[in-house]
Image (cartoon, rainbow, N blue to C red; front, side, top):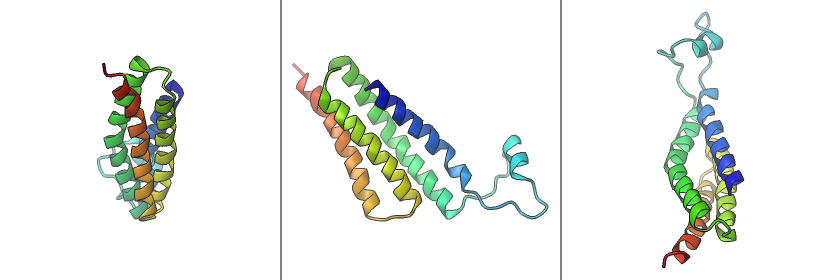
Amino acid sequence: MVLVVLLVLALFVLQTLLPNRFREAPAPGGESKVAENLGPRDHQRPLTVTGHRAARALANMHEALPVFIALALMNLIVAPQAALAVTGAWIFLAARIVYVFLYVGGVPYVRTIVWLVSWVGLVLMIVPLVRAIP
């Protein structure tokens, strides 16, 4: 379970860096990308459409990550050997990776199905916790 948690956190870090990779090109004669990145970033170039998608995918991860982390930690404490929880965590991770690619790529419908699959993973993580309630 610890490995999956670390991989989900790594995905979160990568997603955090992703939106800024998709900014409009600098104006001719304007500040270079390096100068912009080293400066205070008071006046950043606007995000492209893809950058906005990456930012929305990140915002969605901001909503899902606390739920995942809480469930993972509770499972580590209450049911550390629960195979169903580990399977759910792997499903969550795999679905979230696919979700980012689909969201950034602008793929509708399938993206929503993959999002639902990630929540199925969370539900699988809940089952061992419910079983542990006396």
